[in-house]
Image (cartoon, rainbow, N blue to C red; front, top):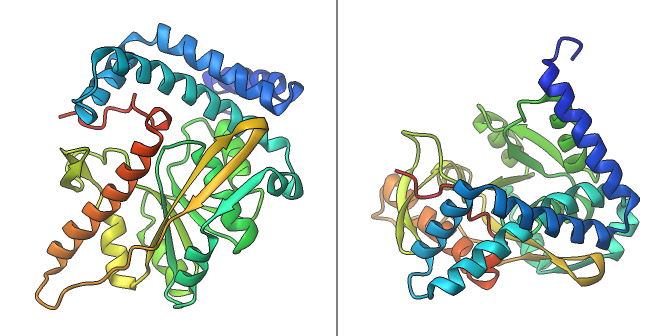
Length: 296
């Protein structure tokens, strides 16, 4: 890192400053500051605000304009909270984090693991998604979380520590198929987020909020080939600096006798996005609407 670009060092210095301020505040105060910063970002980032509003109009065409604008503001406020929360909660050791945690549906993961085929833990950029993976490492043992390393190596080191401090590990999504297969065949857990648009030329179109949406097929293909079930998990902020993490019923990689692999992949990928959509509808202001999900 000695030859890292000066911009990376400046970004890291700014990051350390923000982290220092957040750690000096109570955790609830850090969340409130995040909400304020998120609200300000929604005012400044006008292009992103338009993307968020357009996405909300596509997803909820029945809502009046006033409600769309309200959800747009709330989504930016929540993103600020989520960002600052992920930095602030790094102060907690495992005991304190568990004290602040309400965990629902852990039996869904335990039952899926009993089959010995490995498990996919599926999530989305919803709520406090960084916190959603932490209880798996604490209660069930290490999980390998798939993600792309940050371009800034200093920031990537910090993010990796936040994600792995309770036992989880990280897998570089670039060429991760072989590593995922190895983890699953050993009966392990692989964490993956599937709600964002894949790179051009990748994925298939399935409905998401009634709109054809290009979506990665990696999860469905790997689940079919390994027979690993998929357990949806989501994390949400609760009052007084607490968290609620919910694990839903597993989605089994069943394949009909007359079904081709591509047909099964389409059906399963549709089920995965339907599960994500259902959760977003429960918490519409807490999804990352500023992502250009339906960009053509």
